[in-house]
Picture: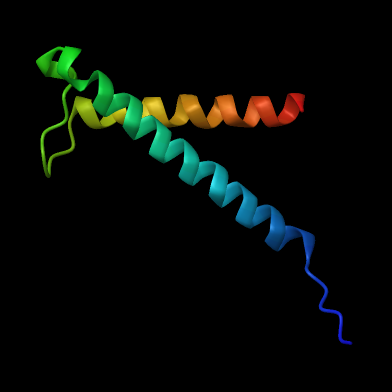
Length: 74
């Protein structure tokens, strides 16, 4: 039986990718759930980089930091 060693950096990279992906999905869910109640200035327009893009990105970053802090506590 052959044993294949898995390097730790590749496992951590995959885990970080999953954390980032989860943060992006949850951040976009929160943003689009709040979208109808946001002022027009905070709404993202299609195919444009605007203030709404920054608001959406900030939700994703906040959730990513929340996930990282929860993982640190566990």
